[in-house]
Length: 141
Image (tube, rainbow, N blue to C red; front, side, top):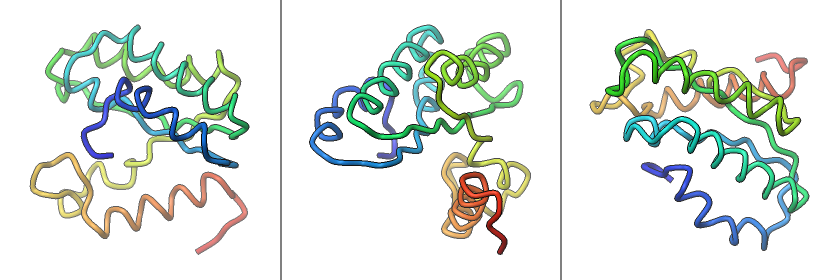
């Protein structure tokens, strides 16, 4: 849900346990970063989410996130540490890590809502296109 943090997802994991989900594409952590939650806490929460979902029988793929310097209020060192979380969790939890879902939108202001954080409907179309290609490299438009 929009605005969710990793802690919010953990609080709702019981719902996921009750469902049979074959594949989970997990993109979470940006709202934690905007709130300057300590990076080790974010990393631990994402690892916990991944382990829980895998324990429910779901295959899990992480979508990485990448923020440029000067974007996060906590500073550039925090940003570098945050950007590295997804590869570390992927290795530690033995799950795939996709490129950032928002990569096709970064330099296109018209694909962002007025808040500058959430994509427009057209932006979501590009995200879906990229995700499909990431999950199935043989897919062609």
